[in-house]
Amino acid sequence: MVILIPVTVFGQSGRRQKRAEAEPPVQGVNRPETRTQPEPDPEFEEKVPQKKGPGLLLMSGTAEVMIPLFMVDAVTQACQEEFRDLLRGDHDLRQERNQNRSDAIKAAKTEDNYFVLLLELEADRLGTSRTGVEVRYTIFEPKTAKVVGSGMGFPTQPNSRVPVPPIGANSQLILLDWVGRDIARQVVRRLGWRV
Image 1 (cartoon, rainbow, N blue to C red):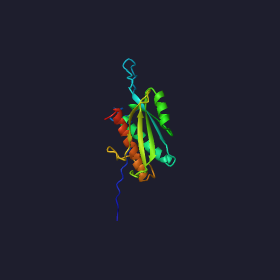
Image 2 (cartoon, one colour):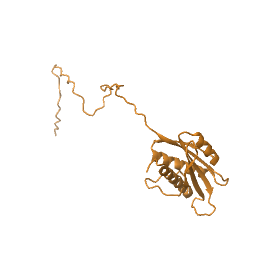
Image 3 (cartoon, helix red, strand yellow):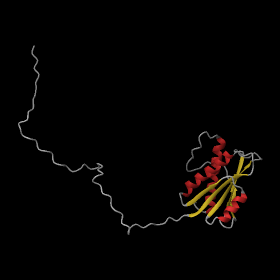
Image 4 (cartoon, rainbow, N blue to C red):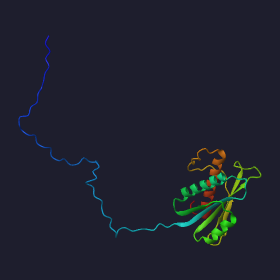
């Protein structure tokens, strides 16, 4: 039996092959060496200063020894996060902890462009709240320390988005988070900063 295997051999006859000519670059390929950065023209650059409204100094504290500080921190942090979401950088926001009403009044009288918001946690003696505390707020006007508004926060679930609760949070901390967010929405409406 005979098996035939075809073998093909390519040879070069001594002629050189032509080099391929440079082709234009393929569209969509990133070539950083061919890019040029335009120089900014200083006469066309106009810096428009962003107008910021009055700021807010957030003070928190508790008048009672029996209320743990983590509850105060939960309300304050939630309130601060909601302010940042609502105000979107239009107003400056600062925070101070472990303050009382007289500290808030002194701060409001010394501030020129900051409203002072005082958050106070009190034990719920009537047992009507699910959190065990009542969170009251007072807004003081800058320079005069006149009370612009006051009220109480309620555990209202946010409509826009449900915030992520802190890791390991129980139902009480989630409700306190909602209370802080409710207070922030009330204060923003009362000051007329957003609808």
